[in-house]
Image (cartoon, rainbow, N blue to C red):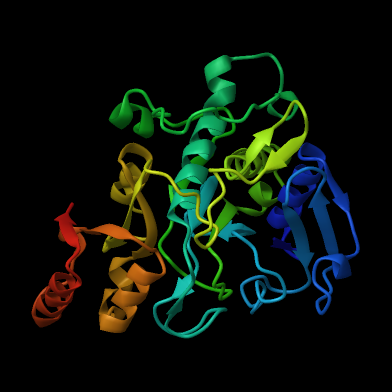
Length: 331
């Protein structure tokens, strides 16, 4: 889902339509009481593509008309750094509402968050790895076969060396802004300059990453254009059930945290909600419980020690962490 007024979202939607066999339909066929500017449905997979008017982050109750297993929000990314970036994050507000609701976190999708980042890294490096003569917009990008394989062979060195011909980096962001959504969801953004918002090559990479990962949610036979809901379809809030990853949350760090990125790309953990250093003062018992509940089945709480608060508030928070009964690891 993306906004018609958002150039990066519109660019990604156009690439999805070209890539993934979407056909336009009347929005009333999906949601009787809501009208979308443009609405599409995949010809073989139960995937809807919606374009809305106005601000996406203020589009409340977008998942109330119809129950979905997950939602991927498409958006432009803005930053003072002005670097070329793919960003992935969970939505929600630790404090005042910037879209969504005040002090309320959305249902995150750790599996989708992690695998979108891993697939963006993989596709983002294809052109420089293959050194083909074809431009990226003519490349045929195939879905990954097994996400349990490490996408980065020499972990530390390769992550630092992600620098391909398009010049984009892949980053995670902490939980921030709306809309409020109680369906497992994630934001995928392209930025952070006006030039990148209209970059069709970057949009093509994003579109491929989305479709490749969503296909893993279905038992899909591409040869026969069939999909059946088998063992790969979850009955638990749309989450892809497997023993591949362990869910976690993260406290501390800067807005762009390399430590979080390394956990996501290198480890067995999938992170749902991230509370950065600048929001830690807002993290009380209620917000910590929301981070845990809206991530689901949390096995570990990562705490970035070097950027953590000091004094009485620090002890208060560690007391709260101890009461959760969840393992805490300082990184």
